[in-house]
Image 1 (tube, rainbow, N blue to C red):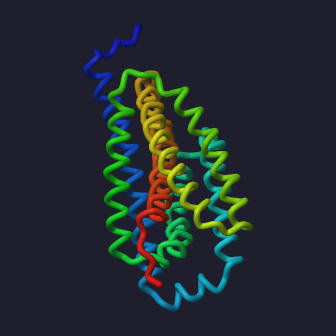
Image 2: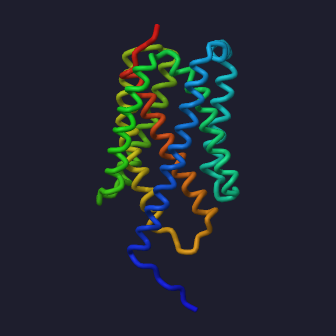
Image 3: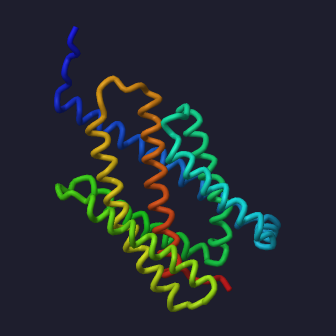
Length: 234
């Protein structure tokens, strides 16, 4: 018996459902990160402990990198529940490490930077969703730029130049603006080309991978904006 082809309206419903799931999981991840960061910043003992234990923070950062690569590279071999759990664990750990950065800024400047970042992210996502232009070339260019600022950041650890840090921050915001639009379009195209009959677990894993991608875009854009807009509490 031949499968009944779905209509364009049904296909659009499937796309919307997938994209909504991606953004819902991204929002959950950001919420976990924000709650944990706020709790740690508000707890002087925890904050003091983290600031005095650099190796612990470094270890957590390494674990975060392992989680990101594990989800990105091995998600097809995972159960959907495992992928979801790893994403939520990453969001929690990132809340801990991010608190060390946020501690140096006033809560008011953190809040204002977050809203600026959220608005910028939303505009970029909408653009990536509605544009007819293929953003593949833009994404490749921005990825090369990302490698460049990673190298520059490592170099600046030893140089300690405030001017170079500001240049890196402005370039970082620009790069993640482009990557947000590109990644959104990529997710939209992935949703439109999904074959019929995919199991709920496969769809969930795709949504988790998409949520992780956009989560990373948002967090990195926020950190670079904070370097530019943030007001030091010192």
